[in-house]
Image (cartoon, rainbow, N blue to C red):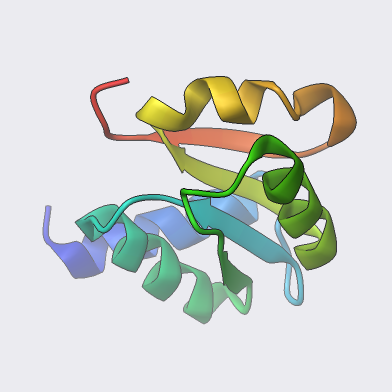
Length: 102
C-alpha cells in the first residue's frame, strides 16, 4: 500500500473512532513514515494533527495531550510505558500503538 492510501486509511480510522471535524489527534513518534501518514491523513477529515515530542516526560505528555484536547494518541511502541503511565489521568483518550520494536 502506498503512502497516500495509508494516509487516507489513517485519517478515516481516526474519524471512525470518534475524532470529528475540529478535534485533535496527537502523534508522539520518532521520525518515521507513519508520522507523515498520520499528519496527511488527518487533514482531509478536518482533524487537527498535534505533534508531541517523543522526549517529553510523562507529565509533559499528559499536559500536551490535554492542552491539545486530543481524542487519539498515536505513539511509538517503544514509548508504551510512558503512555501507560498517563492512561488513568487521560480518560477517553484512545491510544494507537504504531510500529517500533517495543
